[in-house]
Length: 444
Image 1 (cartoon, rainbow, N blue to C red):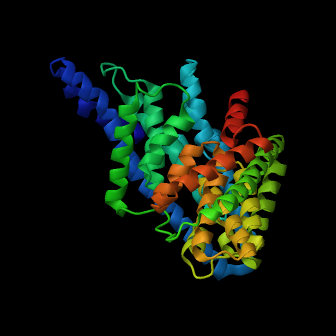
Image 2 (tube, rainbow, N blue to C red):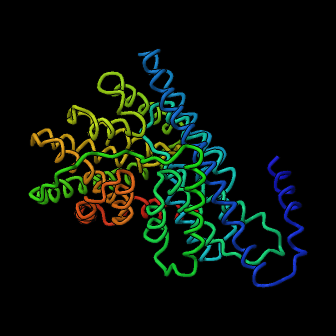
């Protein structure tokens, strides 16, 4: 079916070959793949987000309806989610961002024959299916990292089907644009998508492909907004009074939370390497134990420990009771750590935000801060933990800024990103994504 669709597309654009060759034709033809790719990314991102929300809601329904039976049901989803990755697309596991960065390195080293392992339609389908299954089982994962790999796969597929007479387009430009458009569409954060492309995906000069990334982010964002409307990922938290005496507390909190992110990174790498050495039977046993652990926390502690954690963020930022119990941030931390190392698909962006928010809310309860100061500490905690995981301080600060529309707090966000980055590096020198990328390339 996919081959037939590709043939129809090629036949449909063959008439463009007969147009007179001039500068205008070359410019338009060079831009068309980026336009089409960004439009498709917007559609697929909305579709994937809806699947993810359905899976989260379905898990809560199963938890309430079947209770203790979830100790039998949840392991099935974990094992099945891992199996389809292992069987059909091994590099669709985890977040997807390390795979995208690795694919850019592969393009630069001219080993393009390896690209289908990292990006492509099979990877995209398995990514969506595996992460949905893991979410159905209560996995503490996010969809944003997977959306980036899915979007880069869409652009890679478009690049592959371009006819030989088409103007030459850089595969690196296509992959980077797809990834940036995916993040923009996933979070409704166009600036975040642009900064992510600059800060995370490349260390080189971006002037040669800035226009294509800009256009890709805009089209993907507009497409997603046209389907679900203009929205903020988190909403408008109230911080009417900025108390600059909070600077010291923000610094201290961000250092602590950044340090926790460093511990998360270090444990994740060690646990992932250990799990890689296991045989199939022991791997399945590990998956079952993880699912049972998360099910127990969901049943006996708090059902919000499972899933992305967005409900925890919203309740602490907008609810009357902003504080959380001690077990919520710890449960979220451990649940995300174990879920991420299962080998199934699933990211850490959204769980990182909820981990940072829940730890900050717990600190606020100990200090008995008022509502405004609690909101400030929660948002800066989100920035600090995400920075500690990604080591991309500008991306983290801009993402939280766009999610909350709190422009008056931008300097607090940047301060939190700086402190989180410093503390995390003291624990583990490399970012989670860089460490995973190196392991992936070494295992090829």
